[in-house]
Image (cartoon, rainbow, N blue to C red):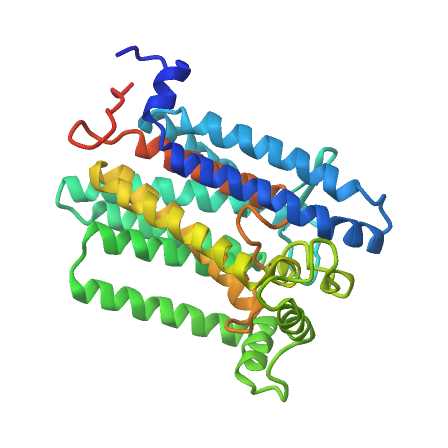
Length: 375
């Protein structure tokens, strides 16, 4: 077989076309949603009516290119490039601490002449792929060395996120790391110790950061009101949408919530398209996650762990977004993968699923795809 990854017929034969089409379909639906919410938000911040629509369409075009291009990588190349993405992302996070603008008490964004970027979105992608390589290294040698090296990276990464602070992102990568450790296999007492550590970390965040404590207290009803204004408006909007929605563009929540295009975009979907479409959207996200995990049965350990971590990132992000919108979780400020407006989050998810497609193409000959020869 030709070693070149640029032969499109060979790539088309090897790539999981159902998974690719589903991801691209989610991006297309996201454009439709932003077409509805974009003008209201643009008007709110004094921009031309079509500004956000055009900008998001450009973001999606880049995201499609990223997904397809990355899916053509060999497994070894994907691992190496992901490691450099992780390092560059960490440098970017440090830069946000030194030069980033503080917004809502946190410094998470770098502002460049070409636009703003959130480095932590790309750090989490590089982190889980790098951790996958370390855990696979330890597994192959029946050693805990890879585990401890991955734990050191976890401490460094979460430490930088806490300095921003970005509690939600810290919890997401801790969850992904736990999922990877569980898959690779570890003694039950180690797992219990890790879970206790994660619980202690969450409690530390609750005691240390006032905004985290406020959100959790409000969620638990300890602050006098059970839900905040945004959650209340979100629930009201979804109730008005009922099963089939009020119609595309006819919703009202986007006029009241400044984050209706991002953190509360699911409320817009349910209000305008109905609970049926909202449930279908969630089912599609769940099914692509299950399909990706099912495909790892024929992958080697490194690819399996990488896919597990990447899928966990997407699912945790989706759960955080939808859970906040329906009042089941404290608001975190998480976007809905492929649907919410934004460049960094959309491109990071495109990179993640491009990598998943690349790793699934490495499945061995006893699966239903051929495996690429290593570089």
